[in-house]
Structures are given as C-alpha cells and as structure tokens.
Amino acid sequence: MAATKDKAAAKAARVAKRAESRQRRKQIFEAFKVQRREDKALLPWMIGAFLLAVLVVFGLGLLFGLEWVFLPVGIAFGLLAAVSIFGRRVQRNVYAKADGQPGAAAWALENLRGKRWKVTPAVAGTTHLDAVHRVLGLPGVVLVAEGAPHRVKPLLAQEKKRVSRLVGQTPIYDIVVGNEEGQVRLSKLGRHMTKLPRNVTPAQIDVLEQKLSILGTRGAAMPKGPAPQGAKVRNLQRTVRRR
Image 1: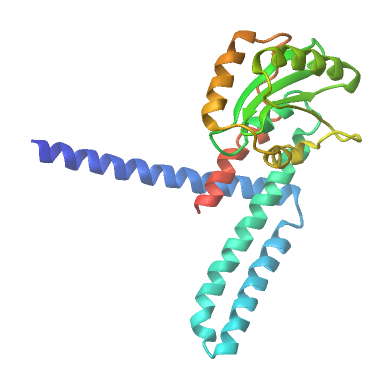
Image 2: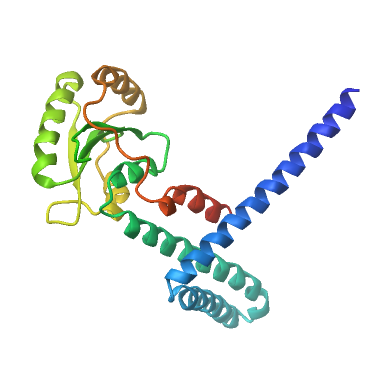
C-alpha cells in the first residue's frame, strides 16, 4: 500500500515538473515575441553573439588541432551568450517602460536579489504618490524616495529623523530615484544598492527590523506596480538563468 502511494506521488511530481517546464518555455516564448516586436535589433544581436562565441571557441580549437571537439562547446557558449543578450534587452525594455511611473522604485526594490534585503514600501508618502521606501540590508538602513524632488526631499528628511531615533549609530543612506543630477536612475537602482558598503551583519538586520516595525507607515498607498509588463521581470530573469 505504501509502495503504491509512493509511486503515485512520484508520478504526480513528474507530471507537475513537466507542466512547470512547459509553462517556463511558454513564458520565455511569449516574452521573446513581445520583445521582438518592440526591439528590431534583438535578433541581430542574439545571432551575432551566438556566431561570435562559436567562432572564438572554434578558433581556439584550431590552435590545438581540436576544432571539432571544441565546436559543441562553442555552440553551448553561443546559446548562453544569445540568451544573456535576450534577458538583458528584456530587462532594459521593462525598466524603460516603468521609468517615471508611480510605484516604479518600490517595484525595482522588490526585484533586488538575495534574501538579506528587507523592503518596506511607502513608509511615507503624499497624495501625489510621492513616496519613501525603507530598505534594510548589509549597508544598514536605506531610504529610497521617488516623486517630485521639492516634495520628496522634506519627506526624506522627516523619515530619516524618525529612523535615526531608533537605530542609533547604524548608517542611514538616502537615495532619490530619477534622471536629474544627483539622482539614481531606476535601471541602476539595484546596482547602486549593491555597491553600498557593508556595515551590519544579517543578525543585526533582524534586530533593526524589529525596532523599526513600530514606526508603521505614513501617507497614501502606492500602486501595486508600475507596469503590467514589468511585474514579472524577476520571474522571467530567473527562468532564463535556469535554462
């Protein structure tokens, strides 16, 4: 009886795995079709990256007299290069569409890689959908603002004052997302965050989260996401990397 149940469970797991694989392929294909319609240079870039990788590896094989042995390796590297080009151009397209829309910074922050980032969106905001988001991570506390500069700067200052009362000597960084001088572009926000110095340990992050949980949030609620096309970018990138 137990053996029959185990076989049934194993069969169900295989069926679920195949269904998930089909769903991933379908998601990638749909993303490819959308990107191809909007990005006429996509195919030339992907084909060029594939051929370049194959030729480079094949050329190395010629030097050692093993060109046909190196050819499958070159094809594998070429496919990897083409997929990488596809993923990067999709990501760039999604960020370009999201740029300037309310909630875009919160969406980008939630796409940060790693479990050590703890994002609390819209801890402060205005009825104009300006907002300050709080992020806890190895750098300490990072306050990220989006909206009109003349409104978010005082909003940032107020939130920084509130946070500083609870975190002591923990560093607090403030970032304004935008395309003006002194601001951080939406597409570069994640990279900017990861380049901040590491000042606290993972255990200290948990302590900070407990301390700051009493602050709650102030201001208007933010939209769920900046654009329907952007909502699944993290899942798409993860799917592309798996393949």
